Image (cartoon, rainbow, N blue to C red; front, top):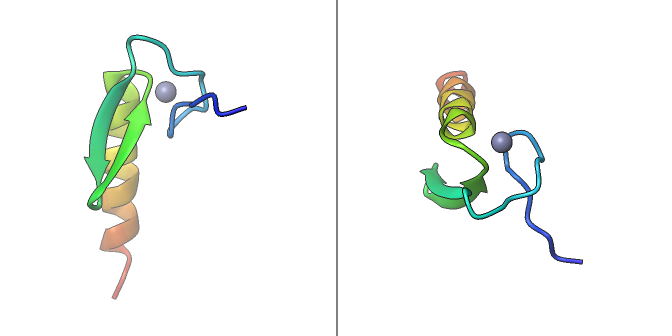
Length: 50
Ligand SMILES: [Zn+2]
């Protein structure tokens, strides 16, 4: 099975799915809220490096 799920909450993606770029990679999420969550998580992760 190759059903796609939200990269943030694992909810099955439907017609409302949106694609966002996180760290140069395109990922799909179920809604704008999840896109914001992913961006903040990535920003926090990269901020901790170095
Ligand atoms: Zn989601």
